Image (cartoon, rainbow, N blue to C red; front, side, top):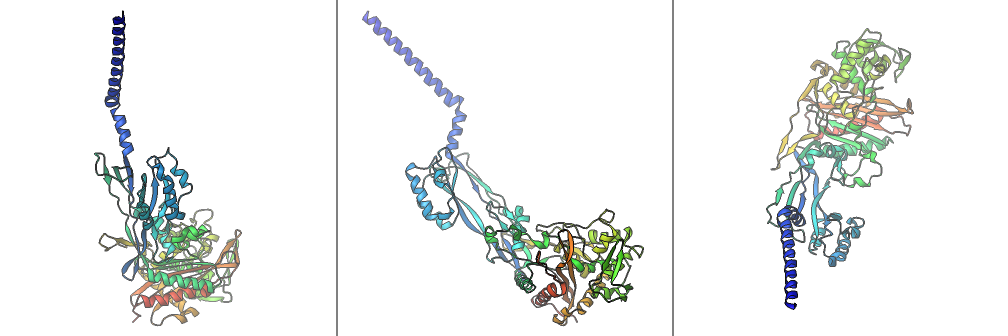
Length: 582
C-alpha cells in the first residue's frame, strides 16, 4: 500500500513537472518565435537613441567697398537634456546642484521636478549654456544626461543695419529683415544620428540599425548694403531727426544702375542681439518697406515725367497758374500762393505748384478735366510702370500700399488730382526710390534688392545678376527729368551746400498727415528724393522721410528732410570717389 502511494505521488510530480516544462517551452516559443519582433524592438528602443544634428545657420555679410565682411555670425550654445529613467538615483541631487552652480539662470523652470519624472524619457534641464559651461558639466560624467549643440546669432557690428538684418527668435526662426524673409535659405536642413548608446547616452559604433544623415548648412548670404554707407546714413538720419524735433524717420540709398540697396535705415532702431529686451514690437517694423504713407510732392517728379513721356507737355510748356483750381466739387490750392500768371512746367516744378501738376495731367485727357482717359494713362505709369501700389519683390518684409484703379468708385477725378501731388495714395519708400531710379537712369526699372549674392565654401562671392525688368519712360524723357530735377535743386537754398562740379538733383515733399480720418495742416510729413553723380550719370538715389506722429509738428521737405539728403549726398561723392562732370 505504501509503495502504491509513493508511486502515485511520483507520477503526480512527474505530471506537474511535465506540465511546467510544457508551459516553459510554450512561453519560450511565444517569446522567441511569436513575439520575437516585439521584444527585439523594445530592446532596441531602450538602447537606441536619435540625435538631431543641428544645421549651421548661414552667415550674413555686408560689403566693405568691394569686400564682403561678416556682420551676423553663429555662437555655439548647448541644451542640457536628461532621460530620467536612465539617471542614477544617487546622482539626481548632484545633477541639480551642479546645474545651479554652472548653468545658473539658464536652467529651465522646475528642472528638479522634470528630472524626477520617471515616466518621461526626455526632459530639458537647461538651455543656451556656453561651451565652457557644457564642458564643466560633461566632466561630471552623469548617467542619462546629454548635451545637444545649437547656436545663437552673434552681431559683431551691434545694431548696424538692424532693420535689414532682422533677428532669430528663441525657436530658431528668423524674424523680420533678411533673417525672416530668407529664413529657409539661411536655416539649412538638420541632420539625424540614430545609434545604440551606453547608459550615459554616448553613441556606440556597433548596431546594424545605426544611421547618420549629415546636416546641410544654410547659405552664407552677402548683402548689397555697404557697412560704411549704412553706418554714415544711420548717424546722419538720427542727427537730422533730432534737429527737426521729430520722432521717427527713414532713409534709403539705392544704386540706380542696378537697383541695389546701399543703405536702408530707420529711426528709432534696436540691437538684434537684444531683441527680447524691446517692450514695443513696432520698433522691429522696417518703415521703409513695410509702412506705406502719402509721400507728398516728391510724386510730382513722376506726374511731370508721365506728361512729358506722353508728349502732353515739355519743361518749357506754359499754363496760366492760379492759387487754386476747381476740381469737381472741390477746390485744390498751391501751398505757395501769389505766383499767378503764365508759368512754365519747370517753374511749377521748382515751386512745387499743385495747380501745375493737375493741369499737366489734364492734358493727358480733354485738357479741362482729369477724365477717365487721363486717369487710365496716369494709372498705367504709376502702377504698371513705376510699380506703385504693389510689392517690389525686395528680400525684406514689405507692404503693397495702394492706388485706386481709374474705373473704381474711389478712383475719381478728385482723388487722381490729389495723386498728382502725392496725396490720396499710400506707397512705400522702396517703391518710390525704385521708380525714381528709373527716372534718372535712362528709363530702366530694376527690382530693388538687398541680396548681392552667396559666399561659397571657399569664401568667394558669387554675385547675383541684376537685369532691367521694364522701360518706364524713354531715354529722352529721363534726360529731361534729370535736367528738371537739377534745375529745381539749383533754385533751392539747399544747393548752396552741394559739392561743386557734380550733378545733384532732387524734389521736396510735404504731405498732410491723416488725423482722426481727416487731413490736417497742423501735422505734416517731410520727404526729399534726389540723385547725385558726375560724368558717368546718376550714381546714387537718396530718399529721406521725417515724421513726428501725434506731436502736431509742421515738418517740411526743404527744411527737415532736405538737409539730411545733402549731408548724405556730399559724403557719398567722397566715399564713392565719383569723378566730377567734365
